[in-house]
Image (cartoon, rainbow, N blue to C red; front, side):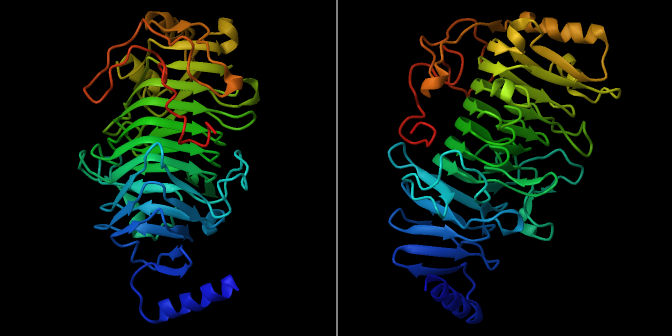
Length: 436
């Protein structure tokens, strides 16, 4: 009966020349499809239920506002049948949840009462935000993964470092992710050419069938980010991302997940400007040990960046730098002073130091390998038990890890006196599915 009502109303909407996103109302539930006109400038209320089908865009010039406590659900489907919310270049999303009333993006079958298992992945697509900030391609712009090549609203990149795509605050993105084709995925949260006036903080991505958060270039900053139980990388960046990150929690499940960080530079050309050189401070990365395939962090294709004042746990592979015979590699970025891993605490990594925690991959000499391995101590990294009880689900060290800290590079960062994502406040409680 519901399907017949939906079909009938959809027929009427299409054939009466409706220029807004197709929808129907059933009680307080809105079913939304996009005919090319996007969402329009509109507010979604917590008093309604929303179900999105297919790719729904916030078009250039439109503003989508989502009230605290709103639940947005997506029609189940994979590959070309996936559903996703995409903020196009020039569009804006204002999704300001609160700790008491987070905004939740999830499957249409999720009643938030256990109808979907916490670790279930790949039920829908994901959230994609595209902006006008720089990316390191000759053309100055690119088409985002997971969107058909003919869809012009899938283009991102530009020249505005201060571009503003809106706000995501206290957001939980659950059970998404899909693979459209080889190297063409929809991640939990995808950020393409997003500028630094965009606010992204207190965001959870849980049980995603690809990367948790992927950042394609841009200057966007991310604070208080939680990624857990994803099938590929927790965090992935390339194409010249030069923003900041602080208070990141990345957790892998047994037999699921690759790298906690996969860092890439350019593609055309590899050494193109801007370089991928973000600053990542106060992260807690917990790998899946012998049951996983990846490393704590992998730097490839001339990627640089800083990881500092962080806690990294439970992986046979530590920090890997790629070396090539062209010198357009991440090892060269380290030698150039554009890659640094310093003032961090490692625990249960690389077989308790029988192996070096800092390693090289690719084409390298023994001297190069020795230099990078020795930099672990030179950069004031340490090994030791941070006092985190992984079995309890409480990721706050007891006591907090203080001392031997690196200075913060700019005014965006909060100055704190501890390593890792947590001092004494367990800030994931009350709004994340992970903490339930």
